Every structure is written in structure tokens, then in C-alpha cells.
Amino acid sequence: MRRGAKIETLIEAIIGGEAQRSVQIAEQLLKEGLTVETLIQEGLTSALYSLNTKCTNEDFNLLEIMLAGRAMMAVMDNVVCRYLPPSRTGETRPEKTIVLGTIEGDIHELGKHVVKILLRSAGYKVIDIGKDVPPEEFVSEAIKHQAGYIGVSSLLTPTLPSIKKIKEILKRQGREDIRVVAGGAAVQQASAEDLNVDFVSGNAFDLLRYLDGIRDELT
Ligand code: B12
Image (tube, rainbow, N blue to C red; front, side, top):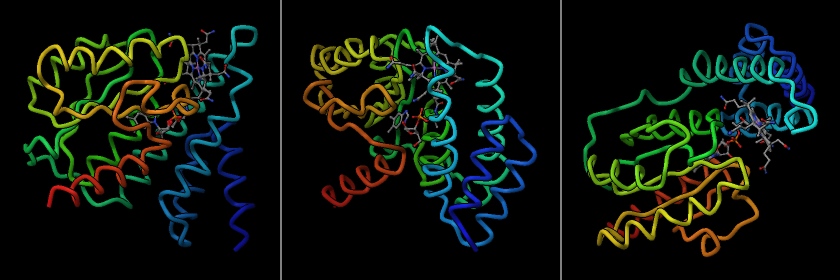
């Protein structure tokens, strides 16, 4: 099979907003042995990324982007979910609980949704607190749900100062034990130190590897 060519077809279908066709192609790719990680990173995320130029202040094609996002989510919900271990929600330990949201000022949520699906299937309890969430709320929700982690998504560069505040608030409340991880397009050029977080994740799979590493440290 010429995998490269097939992934290209999936990317084209998603960009074209063809949900049903995207689902069929993705199903076929996974059946033929493509990994879920490659499908998400090189197929779904790349397809949306290529709409970069249609999502600027000068050229903003809302309908086209929304249809592509819908096609991407159809693949996640109808195909990828079936290839992952079923999500288990019984876990309540802090080291298995994460509060996840998109930072204040930012309404992007497709990446957060991908992270949520993968974490749940890896056995984490994920509290999704939505989009446009102030730093104070990340902290109060993490304390309320006894979460060991806060996951913050950011795709808009102007929101970065709000991410930095999360650990400051945790410190003021004596809760520096709660670790903060950041992900999304806007944080990729920044270091954990710049953002005042514990870890900057390149993608959802990097986060899983980071969490596995901490679990190994603790055991
Ligand atoms: C889709 C999209 C939209 C959609 C969002 C739909 C939705 N429901 O989410 C809509 C049309 C609404 C939108 C709006 C806007 N957008 Co927009 N958008 C995009 C686009 C094309 C794709 C983003 C996406 O969903 N990718 C697919 C997902 C799966 O990828 P991802 O988010 O990167 O997530 C992956 C990883 O990053 C990671 N990840 C993500 N979050 C997290 C969190 C954690 C904890 C972890 C571990 C990992 C992780 O895991 C995911 C899977 O691996 C990007 C282009 C780009 N380069 O990203 C522009 C982009 C982000 N948008 C941009 C802009 C400017 C806007 C608007 C301001 C446009 C406008 N004129 O109004 C508004 C924002 C309004 C607001 N206040 O938020 C700019 C941001 C520029 C910047 N650096 O600040 C971009 C980069 C486009 C560009 N080049 O200009 N947008």
C-alpha cells in the first residue's frame, strides 16, 4: 500500500469538509495497519494545520474551517475511538486525574478534544472545563476534583501571559504539588520555564509519555 498517498487522500477529504468520506478513508488506513498516532498527527492535525492561511485576521473562512473541524471530529468519534482501549472512568486518584481546558481569550477546542479522548482511553479521569477559562478557574477546579494535573491548551499567542499565572495561583494556595502541562500551537516555541509550567507538550502523545514517566518515577 502507498501509505503516503492514502494519508494525502484523508487530508484532502478533511480539508474539503467531507465527513463521511474522511471516516471511510480513516477506517481503511487503520485496518491496513497505520497507527492511531500517525493517523492523528500526520492526517488529522496536519489537515487542520494546512488551513492556517484561511484563519488569519485578513482571510477568515469560518465555514470552510468549521466543516473541516467537523470532519476531523467525525473521524475521532466514529473511527479512532474504536481503535483505542475503551475509556475507564472509575479512577479517582490524583495521579490519574487531570483538569483540562482552553485558556482565557481562546475558543479553540479541537486539540483539547483529541487530548481528552486519548487520556480517557489511557485510564485517566479527565475533567473538561471548556474553553475561554480564566487561570483562577483551572486552579479551583483542580482543587475541587482532587486532580494531580492541570492541562492547558492555547492556540493564540496573546493568551500566553494567562498561562503563566496558573502556577503563581497554585503557589499562593500552597498547592505546588499540582503539575501544570501546556499544549497547542501557541506554546510550541516556548520552554516550560518561559511559560512557568512543568511541561510543554508537543502533542497529545507526548503528554501520555510524560505522564507515564512520572508514574514510573513514583513507583
Ligand atoms: C480550526 C481553527 C479555528 C476554529 C476553531 C474551531 C474549534 N471549535 O476549535 C475557528 C474558526 C473558530 C478559529 C477561530 C480563530 N482563530 Co483559529 N485556527 C484554527 C486552525 C486552522 C486549526 C486549529 C486546530 O484545531 N487544529 C487541529 C488540532 C487537533 O490541533 P491542535 O489544536 O494543535 O492540537 C494538537 C496539539 O497541539 C496538542 N494540544 C492541543 N492542546 C493541548 C493541550 C494539552 C494539555 C496538550 C498536552 C496537548 C494539546 O494535541 C493535539 C493533538 O496532537 C489554526 C491553525 C494552526 N496552525 O493551528 C488556526 C489558528 C490557531 N487560529 C488563529 C486565529 C488568529 C484565530 C482567530 C483570532 C481568527 C479571527 N480572525 O477571529 C479566531 C480566534 C477567536 C478566539 N478568541 O479564540 C491563529 C492563531 C495565531 C496566533 N499565533 O495567535 C492560527 C494559528 C491561524 C493563523 N496562522 O493565523 N480558528
